[in-house]
Image 1 (cartoon, rainbow, N blue to C red):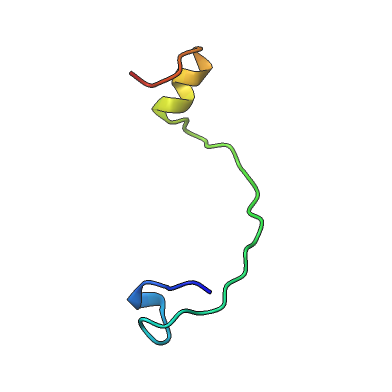
Image 2: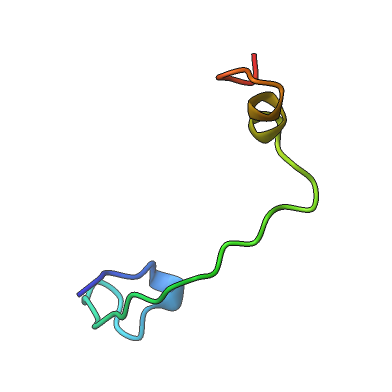
Length: 46
């Protein structure tokens, strides 16, 4: 059971049944600063 934000809930404040689904990973077209830093061998984007 999960509680949804009011705009998405059929009955606000009431938990609803949920199903966990696998979502395939797809690499970003534009890498983030963290991804670029890891590519350079750094452990952070600083």
